[in-house]
Image (cartoon, rainbow, N blue to C red; front, side, top):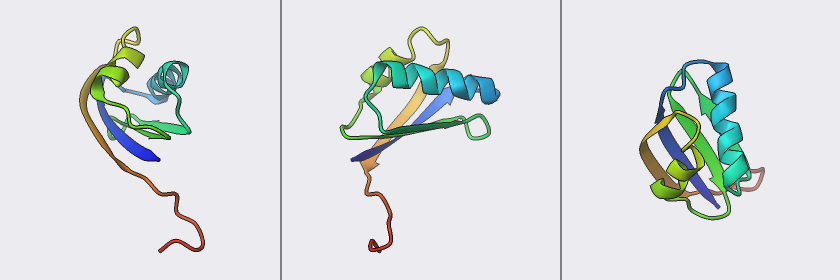
Length: 82
C-alpha cells in the first residue's frame, strides 16, 4: 500500500474537495482519497504507487493544477501495529 500526498492549486472550498476526489476516483484505482481546501492537499491511499503524470492525467479536465507529489509506503494502523 502507498500513501500519496498531492499539493494542488485551486482547492478553495468543500465542493472543490469533492470535485478533486471524484476526478481521482474516476481515473485511478484508489482505496481512499481525502482532500482539504485548508491545506490545499489531497491524500490518496492505494495498492500501487502513482506518479505525477498519472495524477495530472486524472485531474486534467478538472481545472486544478498539481504542484507537488510525494509518495511513501503506507501501513494501516490497527490494534496490533506499533
